[in-house]
Length: 95
Image 1 (cartoon, one colour):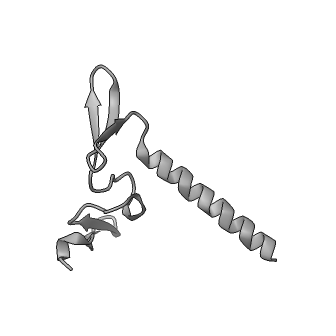
Image 2: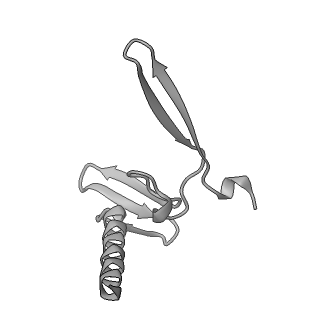
């Protein structure tokens, strides 16, 4: 297993002595492999967000050599929501 094949996240913090607050920062040294590995609005390895002045934002899937106007993160969120609904229904049925 090569180290770069896996996402590595490091955390550090900064203390502001004037305001007595601490801020945490997360750094990722590799791209996430799948949408499930993404944090926030990241795109996984092989995906790219591009702006074209004629059509606006579109997305390139370099792995499957395709493009799309729809944000692929929205599709992943819909899949996650469906999985959660199914899980909750199964849990409710078991009660």
